[in-house]
Amino acid sequence: MKYTPLLLTILTALSASALEFPGARVVSVAPEAASGLEGIYVLENTAGVRAVYHTSAPSAVKWYRFSNLGGAYAEEIASAAGEGGSYITLGSGDFGYIIEADGRQHCFWVTDYSGHEFRATALTVDPEQDCDRLRLDFEGSAAEIACYTINGRRMAISRDITVEHNTLAFDQESFTYTQATATENIEYIDGTSVAVAAPLCATVYTLEGDRFLRAWGRAQQVSTATVQPTAVSAETRAVQDTRENENEQKEPGNEGLGGSAPVDITFDAVVTDAAIFHEWQISRMPEFDINELTYTDLSFTFSFREQGRTYVRFVAADAAGVCEYVSPVYEVFVGESKLEIPNAFSPESSPGVNDEWKVSYKSLVSYECHIFNRWGQQLFESTDPAQGWDGRHGGRFVPAGVYYYVITATGADGVEYKRAGDINIVGYSTGNRGTTEE
Image 1 (spheres, rainbow, N blue to C red):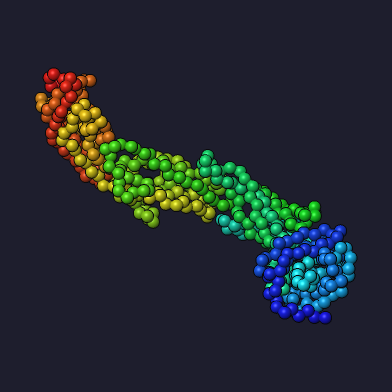
Image 2 (tube, rainbow, N blue to C red; image 1 turned 60 degrees about the horizontal axis):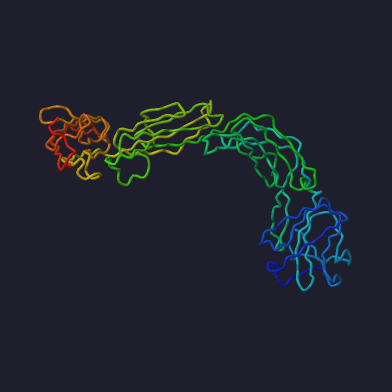
């Protein structure tokens, strides 16, 4: 008798229920919410197994069976009372079952695993491979296991086949690669090969299957011979030295690398085993049409002293130059130079306020300052624009009055500074000044 449902979508709002298979080895698989199935069961062998639906009124239960055509073509099958409910005896093969009980309809799918047995005989590496993916040739049987919804829609039941191998994992804290185990999950193998991640280190690939044989203690494994690394990868970083000079002007709007020259940045890279060739490239062109400098060391420090944008990247490749890694580009911006010179200060008259003579500057790559008294005696000299003069000479404050500076400097933008002028020392506190000019 054919089962004709009022609506094929009525199962979406049904309460959850379950089937039991006394004495059988079974794996329950959670169905998709939109499938209309309340359960999917994979039995090691269905022949002669009882499928039991527990109910207090077994005589009122009706069973229907459907195939890949869906519930519209379901046919009623004989059932019996017992085992604490209503049951049927299964034969061989995969089928869906609709149960009318307790005023509801319930839908299940039952798969006979004996018709889909996973077998693994050999696993070898295909000689044709690319840099990122490795093709493994598989001998055995691991084809798709399908089930069908109440509407006849085909769905795959994942075998959860695993391919395990050693790899390299990057540890950010130590900035190194360490050995790790990688596992890829495969629903099924369609054909005779499977693609997996190419190795970062020498390793063996082991394929194991499947989830059902694992559950029943019969999992099978096959492994390749040792595979040499082919994939090339790397990790890089750029760490800029910071300066907290109160008189050094910041580059407005600059939140990345760079700022006021000189900008000192340390670049580091770590590479995987197949990376035989590697270099850092420095260019003034974002497309790296011309590299101004290259460094083959994995780590180096560079001082950016020219105004404008400079681009840095890291490249690595295998011995043949076929598999390559190119890092993200680091953009370093150095702003134009500036030099502003104060003409007065008041050491010790108001501690903490204007008590040191300092230039205000930005992006100076060379600097030389000399300060003299009116007789031409040098009282102070410096090659660091961050350094100021506190008004002392020989450990004592010089008297208030007029002094003279001579400054020569070069900016990152090529600007040459030659400045000379007066410095006025004013407002000493009583008792803090010298009695005569030095």
